[in-house]
Length: 231
Image (tube, rainbow, N blue to C red; front, top):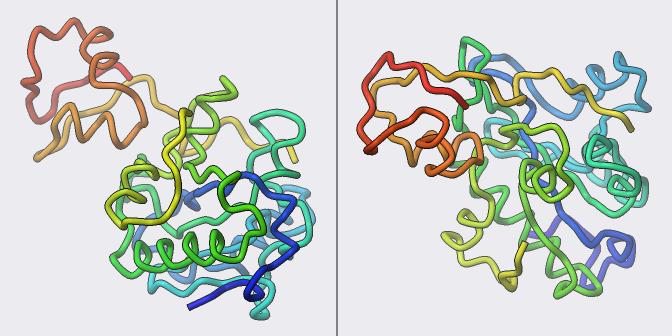
């Protein structure tokens, strides 16, 4: 499956980054798609949906080329403005519906169909890009870390690990204003849930296990359900 003009889509030449986001909506929220995002972003004063693609809960990839209200591929998006000047111009943004639980806390709750669609979208992007070896694919939180911007959990999973698991073809390299206060902003504390581990919590928020240990003066990796951890 391809989502771009083949064999090479020259519109992609301007992008040296593909950034993965989530919409920060719950898994039970009805109809989170490009049209929904377009409405939300217009209410913020933007020109419409800031993402170039939106992946719905059932795995549909919605782009402007296919008639959906996503940002046109040849137009600058509005999805990483908080990372500093120039990043929106050089980054193509794709967002998965979901990313928070019923209480509004970050949660990696995406469907298998969404993950499969994301893998296909990334592969299609790299296949159609004029210079795929110059492209870096990462999560929003990874770009935030690089630019030392206000930390967020978005998209609530490690994109580099996802690409390795999916055997996507990319070399491993070191690695409009947006609202600062959102469900994706890192909380000051986190209440441990049943089945949690320090590793799982670190993957959720994009921080290291050592950082969690240090902030909470933990001598081991043992944690208990209901325990409050500093993030």
